[in-house]
Image (cartoon, rainbow, N blue to C red):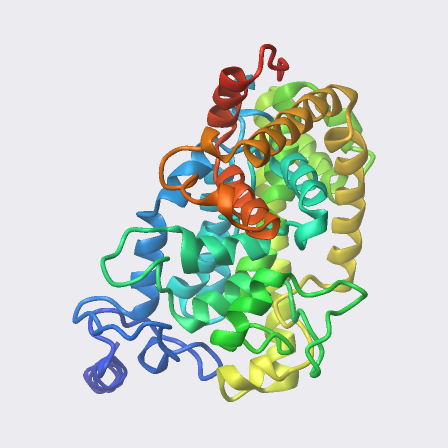
Length: 417
């Protein structure tokens, strides 16, 4: 780089650093700019050393809800093996991919990472099994949705700060948390595709409008597709480790089949364990590169000049190409039929379902069985409030704590193996 170019670059960096402190990274005009965040529900002084989005990420990482993800199921119950993914390791992998996508698209990496790290805060113990059980138990009182529960956690249930409940995250992080998979409502506030907007989101939105009828930022879109890329790869890895999946089964699929053929051609004597790892890392790379190319083409077509233009685009920009989307649908269908619905997994899910239902019934019938801080006054409130408080307590449990509570309250607890 010659002296003139270096001087121009330094001047550009200085201009961009104004009002951003030490948080500068090159970003495009369509990216979310932390210097112009819409702010927090409770106003706070800005940090001289961190951007608002960096502070959000740090608050998320230091929260109790984040630590609990360590002992929450992804596919396999934690005690089935130390090397299987949990919600925590899954979230970290999603965050890494989200940052890579945001970097390639010149978005704000910290915001993409924050949305990725917080996106599973509302998951119950035992993964989707726990969510389905809790949703049925809450049917009379608005149901249960893990995305809405994530919003409750960060806006109300975390109690760490002297001046407010929740984490008081920025508008952009909350928007990404709620809408990373797309708009939730039409312009009249009615839910889309026959699905009502979860009550917890509607209640919060009345106080702090998250624009539920618009798309989320590019950073949130990066986090959303990073979630798909991460679990499509690591569920294969965990499935191979468990023995429920085999490399021969995966060779019948378009995307894994192509990759495995390339690996065999280049490394004909490679042991099966390393073949599986090669498959996972190459699949992630192919998917990430496909998304980057597709998103860049979308940006060239739409030509957004601001983050608001992204929200108004009426389409998801960070997405797979049609060809990769077809391969990904085939892979998801395969994993659903051969891993998530495998008889041994279903047997564990059946036992986990019973644990969650038993605990809900026990706490609802006798709130005093819940710890101090949860049980006070619940005997004197209506059933709607009591049920929601029980759901909040139960959703926050780890797998291990749920099993311990079941052992305390019942004579016999199912074996989750």
